[in-house]
Image 1 (tube, rainbow, N blue to C red):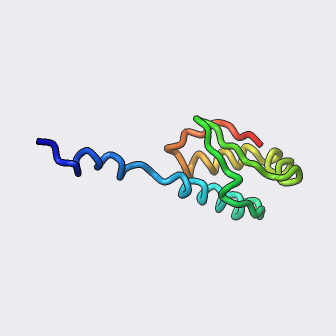
Image 2: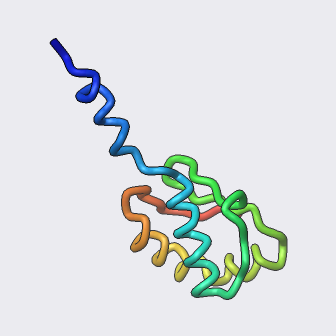
Length: 85
């Protein structure tokens, strides 16, 4: 007979996406001194989407390589390879 704990055990290994969003927000705040909210950060497949205003978008777009490197180091299990705004 199968124990219900064994069936539900795999669900305990799933990470909360809000944790990854908080990490991204902290990276942007620490490295670029920009304040954004968790609800402005989205993940789609291997893509990081930031819904920010035009001034922040231009600032982050210029520093995209630095941001992408920091994101890859801090959230390696997301396999982020591009950033969209």
